[in-house]
Length: 140
Image 1 (tube, rainbow, N blue to C red):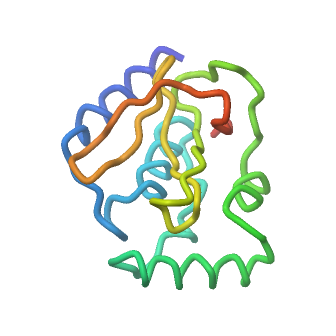
Image 2 (image 1 turned 90 degrees about the vertical axis):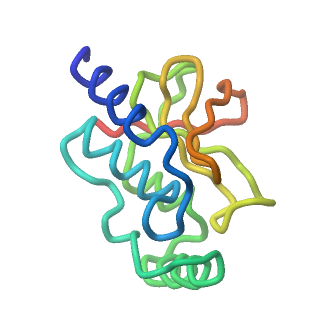
Protein backbone atom coordinates (compact mmCIF):
# COMPACT_ATOMS: atom_id res chain seq x y z
CA UNK A 1 0.00 0.00 0.00
CA UNK A 2 2.86 2.39 0.70
CA UNK A 3 3.96 2.16 -2.94
CA UNK A 4 0.44 3.04 -4.09
CA UNK A 5 0.33 5.98 -1.68
CA UNK A 6 3.75 7.21 -2.81
CA UNK A 7 2.92 6.75 -6.49
CA UNK A 8 -0.45 8.52 -6.20
CA UNK A 9 1.15 11.36 -4.25
CA UNK A 10 3.88 11.66 -6.89
CA UNK A 11 1.30 11.77 -9.69
CA UNK A 12 -0.84 14.31 -7.79
CA UNK A 13 2.20 16.58 -7.41
CA UNK A 14 3.11 16.17 -11.09
CA UNK A 15 -0.34 17.33 -12.27
CA UNK A 16 -1.23 19.63 -9.37
CA UNK A 17 -1.07 22.81 -11.46
CA UNK A 18 -2.05 21.31 -14.82
CA UNK A 19 -5.41 22.83 -15.79
CA UNK A 20 -8.47 20.96 -16.97
CA UNK A 21 -8.48 20.40 -20.72
CA UNK A 22 -11.19 18.47 -22.55
CA UNK A 23 -9.90 15.26 -24.11
CA UNK A 24 -6.36 15.74 -22.77
CA UNK A 25 -6.56 16.24 -19.02
CA UNK A 26 -10.16 15.98 -17.91
CA UNK A 27 -11.67 14.21 -14.91
CA UNK A 28 -12.03 10.90 -16.74
CA UNK A 29 -8.45 10.84 -18.06
CA UNK A 30 -7.18 11.89 -14.60
CA UNK A 31 -9.12 9.04 -12.93
CA UNK A 32 -8.04 6.58 -15.62
CA UNK A 33 -4.37 7.50 -15.07
CA UNK A 34 -4.82 6.97 -11.33
CA UNK A 35 -6.36 3.55 -12.02
CA UNK A 36 -3.19 2.60 -13.90
CA UNK A 37 -1.11 3.65 -10.89
CA UNK A 38 -3.26 1.82 -8.33
CA UNK A 39 -4.16 -1.37 -10.19
CA UNK A 40 -1.70 -1.47 -13.07
CA UNK A 41 -4.52 -1.22 -15.59
CA UNK A 42 -6.90 1.44 -16.91
CA UNK A 43 -10.60 1.29 -16.22
CA UNK A 44 -11.83 3.60 -18.96
CA UNK A 45 -9.46 3.69 -21.95
CA UNK A 46 -12.40 3.01 -24.26
CA UNK A 47 -14.30 5.99 -22.80
CA UNK A 48 -11.55 8.46 -23.65
CA UNK A 49 -12.12 9.94 -27.05
CA UNK A 50 -11.79 12.64 -29.62
CA UNK A 51 -13.44 15.59 -27.95
CA UNK A 52 -12.04 19.01 -27.20
CA UNK A 53 -14.90 20.99 -25.69
CA UNK A 54 -18.03 20.41 -23.63
CA UNK A 55 -20.32 19.98 -26.65
CA UNK A 56 -18.18 17.34 -28.36
CA UNK A 57 -17.60 15.63 -24.97
CA UNK A 58 -21.37 15.47 -24.41
CA UNK A 59 -21.90 13.93 -27.85
CA UNK A 60 -19.12 11.39 -27.20
CA UNK A 61 -20.51 10.52 -23.77
CA UNK A 62 -24.12 10.13 -24.97
CA UNK A 63 -22.89 7.89 -27.80
CA UNK A 64 -21.01 5.66 -25.36
CA UNK A 65 -24.00 5.34 -23.05
CA UNK A 66 -26.09 4.22 -26.01
CA UNK A 67 -23.37 1.88 -27.32
CA UNK A 68 -22.90 0.13 -23.97
CA UNK A 69 -26.54 0.32 -22.86
CA UNK A 70 -26.10 2.39 -19.71
CA UNK A 71 -28.36 5.14 -18.42
CA UNK A 72 -25.58 7.23 -16.85
CA UNK A 73 -21.91 7.32 -15.86
CA UNK A 74 -22.59 5.92 -12.38
CA UNK A 75 -24.22 2.80 -13.82
CA UNK A 76 -21.35 2.45 -16.31
CA UNK A 77 -18.76 2.80 -13.54
CA UNK A 78 -20.60 0.30 -11.31
CA UNK A 79 -20.34 -2.22 -14.16
CA UNK A 80 -16.53 -1.83 -14.24
CA UNK A 81 -15.47 -1.20 -10.66
CA UNK A 82 -16.53 -2.39 -7.21
CA UNK A 83 -18.32 0.27 -5.21
CA UNK A 84 -17.00 1.01 -1.73
CA UNK A 85 -19.23 1.84 1.21
CA UNK A 86 -16.39 3.00 3.44
CA UNK A 87 -16.74 6.52 4.86
CA UNK A 88 -13.04 7.14 4.15
CA UNK A 89 -11.99 4.82 1.32
CA UNK A 90 -8.33 3.93 0.76
CA UNK A 91 -5.98 6.40 -0.89
CA UNK A 92 -6.21 5.99 -4.63
CA UNK A 93 -9.94 5.14 -4.70
CA UNK A 94 -12.11 6.66 -7.40
CA UNK A 95 -14.55 9.27 -6.13
CA UNK A 96 -17.63 10.61 -7.83
CA UNK A 97 -19.30 13.86 -6.86
CA UNK A 98 -22.68 14.78 -8.33
CA UNK A 99 -22.31 18.09 -10.14
CA UNK A 100 -25.18 18.59 -12.57
CA UNK A 101 -24.34 22.24 -13.16
CA UNK A 102 -20.70 21.93 -14.18
CA UNK A 103 -20.08 18.55 -15.77
CA UNK A 104 -21.10 16.82 -18.97
CA UNK A 105 -21.68 13.51 -17.18
CA UNK A 106 -23.34 15.15 -14.15
CA UNK A 107 -20.66 13.49 -12.02
CA UNK A 108 -17.15 14.81 -11.45
CA UNK A 109 -14.50 12.13 -10.97
CA UNK A 110 -11.66 12.58 -8.53
CA UNK A 111 -9.27 10.47 -6.49
CA UNK A 112 -9.19 9.97 -2.72
CA UNK A 113 -6.07 11.16 -0.97
CA UNK A 114 -7.04 10.57 2.65
CA UNK A 115 -9.91 12.65 4.00
CA UNK A 116 -9.94 14.75 0.84
CA UNK A 117 -10.56 14.14 -2.83
CA UNK A 118 -8.46 15.63 -5.62
CA UNK A 119 -10.61 17.02 -8.43
CA UNK A 120 -9.59 18.88 -11.57
CA UNK A 121 -10.42 22.54 -12.03
CA UNK A 122 -9.55 25.18 -14.61
CA UNK A 123 -6.46 26.09 -12.56
CA UNK A 124 -5.34 22.58 -11.66
CA UNK A 125 -6.24 20.26 -8.81
CA UNK A 126 -8.49 21.30 -5.96
CA UNK A 127 -8.80 19.29 -2.77
CA UNK A 128 -12.28 18.96 -1.31
CA UNK A 129 -13.30 17.23 1.89
CA UNK A 130 -15.11 13.94 1.49
CA UNK A 131 -18.85 14.49 1.73
CA UNK A 132 -21.60 12.05 2.62
CA UNK A 133 -23.01 12.25 -0.92
CA UNK A 134 -19.75 11.21 -2.61
CA UNK A 135 -19.64 7.80 -4.30
CA UNK A 136 -16.49 5.66 -4.16
CA UNK A 137 -15.13 2.76 -6.16
CA UNK A 138 -12.04 0.60 -5.81
CA UNK A 139 -9.62 0.34 -8.72
CA UNK A 140 -8.17 -2.86 -7.27
